[in-house]
Amino acid sequence: MTKHLQYALLIGFILRLFSSYFVYGPQALDDYLNQILPALRMDQGLPHDLPVYRSALMIWILLGWTKLGHLLAIETVLSQIRWIYFFLGTTSLIGILGVHYYFSDKKDSLAYKLSLYLMAAYGLMPFISTRGFLESFATCFVTFGLGLLVHAIREKKDILICAGLYLIGFATLLRFQVGLIYVFAVAYFIYQKNWKLFFQSIGVGIALILTQIGIEVLDGRAPMSVLLNYFKANENVAQYGAQPWYTTWATWLFFLYFPFSIGIAKGAKQLKDHSLLIGSTLFFVFVHSLVPHKEERFLYPIVGLTIIILAIAWANQWGQRWEKIIFRPGFYFLNSILLVVGCFVNTQVGEIGFPAEIQQQSNKVLYFDRDSLVGLGYMHEIFIRPPSKLIKLTDKISNEALAPYRHELQNMDGFVLLTSNPDYRGELQVFSGKMALWFQCSVESEKNSLTDALIYKMNPKRNYRRRPTWAVVCLK
Image (cartoon, rainbow, N blue to C red; front, side, top):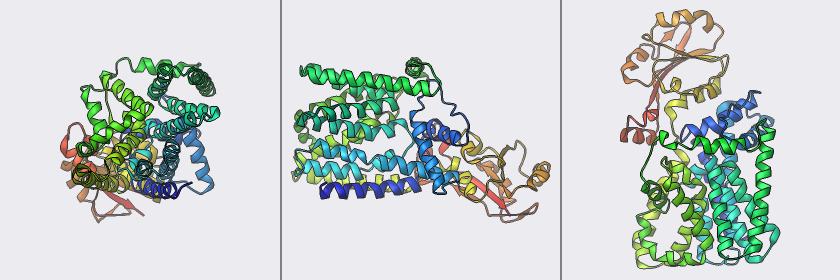
């Protein structure tokens, strides 16, 4: 293990630790609803309730980690979510090992060192690697798998070749579209007329199919039903919104820190010696550009590969005029901002901030919702568990509106008044800092973050989940 590998692992660990603790909010609904919430449901002895096109593989992994957390007295929901994000971030460090293997014959090269440190401290990586997306979790396995595969082919080690292929395949079992990278690898072996690698990839592919069948049978489903339902569910993805083809390429260019990367564009000529790396990445981006519905997270699986591509081009142009004038200052500026935001600025705080923090204090609270983000979606059920309850108020917040709940509140530790509608803030402020029933109320407080505020301001109609939430907390 080189000293640069050790440093990169340490830096990567620290940054991911920050992100998992401070940025516990979801990037999007799928972050919580399709992975974290089902795992926490199963931890309570409930069914995961996944859609028929979602595999239970990641849920089982998160469930096992949550069970381990109980042994360490990690019991409140917020601490469990941070614990899960810590696991995801720590697991992502194997992507750094993938870089180590990829450059196993060039450990003294600048490209190797840049790749290691970029994998550790690339601006988006701490945030991406600690999210609950299937795409995020798949990222490290894709990077580690391809790095190990390239190393094994170079060293002609059959067992490691199969291991590298299986790691890419494992990422595919997490998120099926990652299979595009596996498909490209098979096609690449055919193009190279390397029939031994081709048959090895076919053999590992069969093992992966059997693994998928085993997962579905253990989950009480018909063999291959999840994959078939996945294709059916994506027959009309345009219903979720359609974007032009160039959106995918623009997102990928942003991952390359365009337009600053113009300063190292000449370094791209070195990629001709990395055909499996660049080919699988471009193929993945190309196919996704053809899909009508596009989200930046769909490209998360190739972020690690993109980082290696960036490092190779950067190393080739290191010290050149445009690298020093354009790319290096631009990279340091943008990367620093992204690191600070990704490690310390929470997301969607208006929806989950108050319940997450209050559940740390008590699980016997009534939440009175007056047009707030907390009552808008499904995330509140993660934090608001019986005997706590969410009650939606249609009338003005007042002592009269709370009167029907006096008896129930006698068995509670307090209540919370919530709104995300500025027009109703006056109703909250009547209770601010006052006594209500037999509870002392706090002054009105707000939950929002810098990123939420900026995103909401750019498009209030589309990003309504980024609104602030105001609350008055009345506890014993």
